[in-house]
Amino acid sequence: MEVWTGFIVGFVGSLHCVGMCGPIALALPVFGESKLQVFLGRLLYNLGRIITYSILGALFGLFGSRLILFGLQQYVSIAIGALILLYVLIPRKIKTRVSELSFYTAIVKFLKTNFSKLISKRTNRSLFTIGLLNGILPCGFVYVGIAGAVSTNGWIEGALYMALFGLGTTPIMFATAMLGKVINFNLRSKINKLIPTFAAILAILFILRGLNLGIPYISPKFEYPAAKTEIQEVDCCH
Image (cartoon, rainbow, N blue to C red):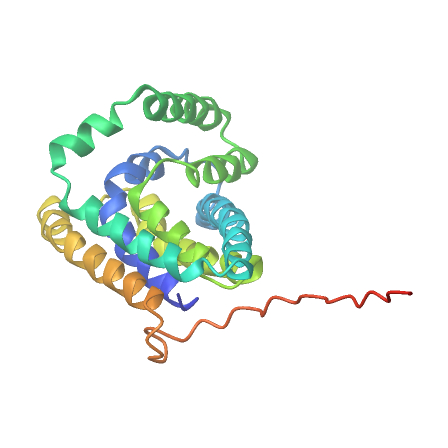
């Protein structure tokens, strides 16, 4: 997956995910004597999110680079595309039940508890830490971003991919935090109807990438390192 696509995934995803992360952005404390201080606090919050996304991208990009060595990346790319398509086709009721699983709810509860403690502190450090924690909040589009990081060629590309993903989410999240408003409900509803189509397109791109068709940017040829074997000659003495 091309690194620049991380920004597009992040931007489109932010239009959908503002429903979950928007309340956090709205709850961020306002302190300081000037608009510049408020701006700095919101900037630190978003910087924290981007750093967490970048760390996740580096880890999964490194994982993806190991797959290249074993000649598995194209199969993983197909599998990721298939999983995204499956997610799109799964009925909403099943997704809701999954979100109610104890493991999922435990993570969300832990994060929300810490968000409350940090919000009460009203410092720039706490805003930055909220951003760091926000980056690991369970979110379908973050998982899509991570999948993109896996399909890059190494930890640097993976980190850059997810950093761009974070930058893509920033305009909406920053505007929400600064203006104190979430996107209009009707507009968000229209956008949400387009999200499955966008996710399906991404899934198809992942699958095409894995098919190794030799199409530039869409399905480039995978070139795996040739396995090196050493043949030792044994001298036999008679």
